[in-house]
Image (cartoon, rainbow over all chains, first blue to last red; front, side, top):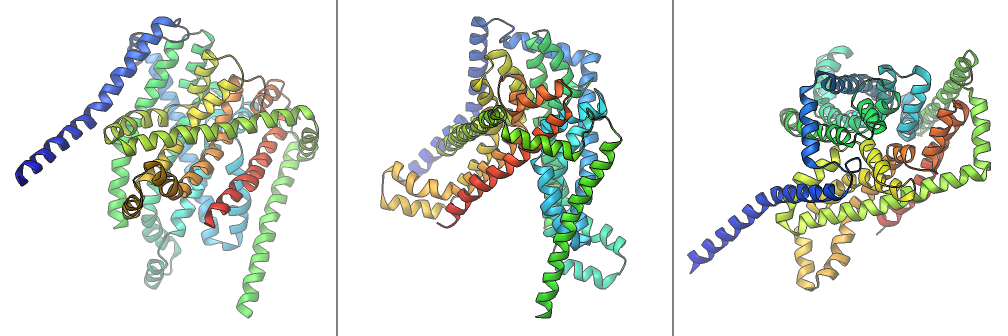
Length: 265
Length: 256
């Protein structure tokens, strides 16, 4: 009797697992079918079919010119993340070492940067620097700085004072202490910050490129928009989703988990 | 006593330095702007005057109102849809894969300008297109927060609730939703920030009204003064909304 209930429980659990595993694929198929059906009704400049978009995607990954745009976007994102991470971290470190400046950073500069619109930075930098890579990098960096500031401040606030005290009893050199104690205890936060910045940067990059860039996927989308080439727009969007999700899930997340395990434990 | 006095003086000094830096920044802006033509960088005084003028013109107020109500409607809709998706994934385990592995990653990595362009292609310029884009951008933030809340719900509390009643609706209303309030509030706060900072892009492409539209108009006319004044107006409206709506909301539910 007992055995049968266990067996029943196992088989129903297995069925549940199977349903759970199959459901996403079924959903994808249903979605593609619905898309195809809608594309049959709608004109192709409104909604190109999945096959048309897949073909455009193939053309995209085999064309050096298109890949060049992807490269330009990557360059913009990487440069902006590097710049804003350095600026945000420096801003976060200032009140840590000079508490008198805490109010200035946390109540004046931080909230201002945090509430200034991304569109504002984008259009403003277009007016200042013209249509160049600098415009795009400046606009993304300006949007990302508050994220770095908030996260790194949280990291600094989270450092164990006893560890600092212990380190202080070993050395009086602030540079050593910074390099050997403070930076390593910030590693988990550094990774979390970079991951958040990576996610946000892609949300802004295309906007910045569309209004102020002369290269990149945003620029490409803008050209496609003017030519009613909706398939290219879809292909670019799908490429970005795949790229952002893939990198975040398969590179950044495992890396972050590894670092957190190593340093937080 | 002395320690208290010391901390008081240091707080005053901190405050003075903070405001001093603001004054210095304004002074720096004024000095830099003096050497530059007005269409590149207008001075702080001109911009401040334009800002005051803006808040006195009915046209600007009307556009600000249009943007504000779109933001509020979008946050409510995104909270409902994102929360609904989170509940679906939580309540029906076989749907968890669909929400977590398909819907969430796609919405989360979808570029915001992508939505804006698609809406501009699909819909006529107007409120619906803008709200569609803003909702699409905000859904993942709400979904992630509410899902986190559902994951952290105390199971023993739920069990106790179920021992009192079999009505699922009553458990939901009396137990699950109140337990989710902090997560809902944090979702609202995040969505509010994103709406004003990023989702405003919706108004650049598909709207005949709104602050985004005003900004684009000022930028195309190379009217930097109006443009900067509008940027600062957004900062003011953002802060005012936070103080008048978000913070009271958080206080109200904190007391419970």
